[in-house]
Every structure is written in structure tokens, then in C-alpha cells.
Amino acid sequence: MHKKILICDDHLLFLNGLAEVLKKFGPAYEINLFSDTDRCQNYFTSAAVDVFICDLNIDDRDGFQLIQQFKKIHPKAKVIILSAYFEEFLVSKAQRLGVNAFLPKETPIEELLEAIESTSPEFYHASTTKKDIPDFAKTDIAQLKKFSLSAQEKQIIRLIIEGKTSKEIASILFISKTTVDTHRKNINKKLEISNSSSLIKFAHENNLFS
Image (cartoon, rainbow, N blue to C red; front, top):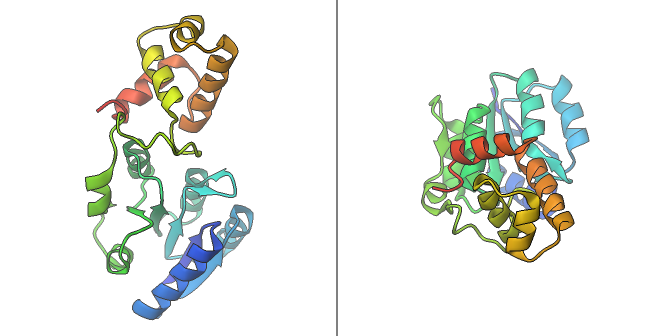
């Protein structure tokens, strides 16, 4: 019986290219592609899926949320995150959610096929990801997208953990209190937390400062 693979990624070139590579080098998979989360969710709500390959940022939606919805319907299916973002806290979150593998998008096809076909229950963490995950101080501050923290956000997190108020942070960083408050809201949204206590706990639990 052919494995039924579902792939969701809003980069059409990558999406179609991945499908072609899997068809060329993999077994005879049944592959279904979606570039938006609504259509993808509608599909897996009623269709059988063996392997779900998902990006983390799809049409401005959190890929983790889509994965959680998928797992409620297909608890035994394999879930593989294939993403350009692999900061340590994202990998840790994926593991906590029961994701089976976390791979960077430049993963060789042989390694992706290994992750798809593996029967091991252990979390598959690509060797390139293990080696290249940046720590908090070395994260690429030029990437200001949804799952990356900007340089100023990182500074603010450090100062929050030191117990500084928004007014004090504004003075230290030479920015307005309004800007600090905006950053704090964005940080909470990105990390899915609601207050300073949760931020401190999240930072330590996910090794943001290791």
C-alpha cells in the first residue's frame, strides 16, 4: 500500500519541486499538495494521511497550530516539519507537540526519505540542524520573520528577565515606552505567551540563553 503524503507550504516553487523529487527518488507515494492552510485543513479533516510534511509559516499562519489540528484527527500519522527556521526553541516545541522529525529545507533527499520511511518512535533531528542551531546570542538578527526574534526583541527579553520595567527598558535602549510595549506584545504573540512570568519560564525551559 502506497504511503499517502500531505505537504503544506506556501512557496509554490519549493512545494512543487519537493513533490517532483519525492516522485523521482522515493517509493510510489500518493502525494497531495496545498499552498494554503484552509484548503489543507479541509483536506485532512476527511482524507487519510500517513505522513504530513509542513512548513512553520504558511500564509501568515502558525504552522504549529495546523499541526496540532492535524494530530487531533490523525494521531498515528507521521509529522515532519521542513522549515527554513530551526532555532532551538522551535525544535523543542516541535518535540513537545509530538512531531516526528524536524528538518531544514536544505536537507538532502536521502535524509528526508529516511525520515519518511523510519519506523523509529524517536524524534528525528537532522544532523545539520543539530550542528547549526544558533544559540540565543548567535541567532541571525537579520531575519525578522514570524519565528525569529529581532536583535531588539532579544535585548528586551534579557532586560525583562532582569526585572526591568518598560519605562526602564525604554531608557536603556533609547527608545520610547510605546515602542517597548509594542515589542513586548509582538514577543508574546511569537512565543505564544501572555505575561512576563510566562516569558521568563519559556526562555529558561527552551534554552533561549544557552
